[in-house]
Image (cartoon, rainbow, N blue to C red; front, side):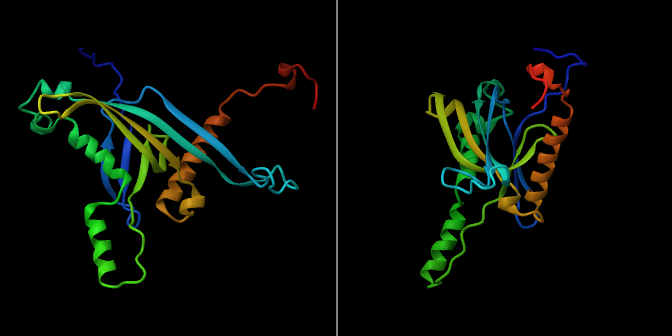
Length: 219
């Protein structure tokens, strides 16, 4: 399908890996196709909380809402396989490299595991947990969100003669990291505050309505 010069430029969603100490971008992962839907769920943190909480102050917030995001992304090697000279890795491995890259977001590297094992073998009593990169879900310029990957699954749906996957669906479960998790001074904390402020600015653009719209004259 050809596009006219006036067609809007397609912006892709994706995930950015950032060094948590230097705030330098380590890697950018763009989705091959933008997800058709994005599910977001927010659970408020109030002082009362669940049953048995502090009922004396039911209208006070304890902190930012706990937000979770989930979506599915399609992966397809068909277009690349039509041009084998330009996509040698896809011809040799199908979608396996892309799937392996996404899987790596959910676990430490083999080098990190080997280092921890060496430290344990040398008798070190206290070994710090392995440091993961900060993940940013980028869904347009106004939604750059620090997140933690809580779940990842992939369904491989078609294969080439060597059993390399050539079509797959990847499912992501994410939890938004707030200033409660990251602090105000960190890069991630600053990005969360920007994300929250962008949502507040959007909310302020809605047209106000009067009580009469709801069929009442006062409350």
